[in-house]
Length: 198
Image (cartoon, rainbow, N blue to C red; front, side, top):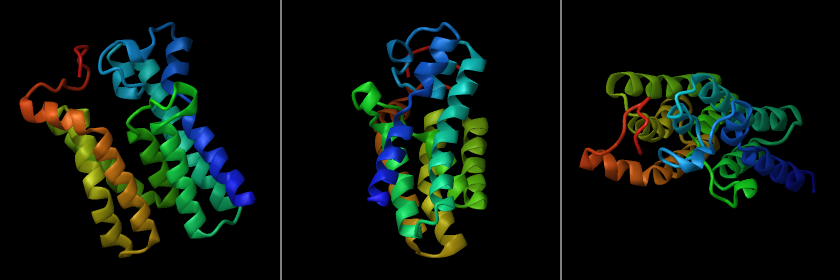
């Protein structure tokens, strides 16, 4: 029962839509009505309000980190902690509070990874930052970081249970970016900071 409660709580925490909360706090339009329509930090940035985007980014990352951190402190096994990590991540992707239409999970996944293994999380975040700085495409950076995450995990820890969780997170992230991948291939993807539809 305790495990079930932890998983439901993690999912509900993941469902908290910080893009919506920050937009209301800063008097912005619903992020689902402009840009990519995605309730995430990158799309909130398209509103031109960097503070709102930062609040969204931090909030989405913190909920991923908090769910895993609390599970660790409660003494759950590594397998249960892995399930909690997936639950909070899926909560962000398919939030009950937004009729199961959520964000793409980049910040939440980063928070999860940092909680699971700070060095792994920082390595993956560094991959995202490098790609974003070099090419100015948030989606490309996310896809490359997601693809590299399980590889980095294998190099650091081998093929353990954590690597399986990281692999699932990575595949889900890439899947959520499928339309972005198509636009990248067609040369139609908007760069970071662009207010055009992405």
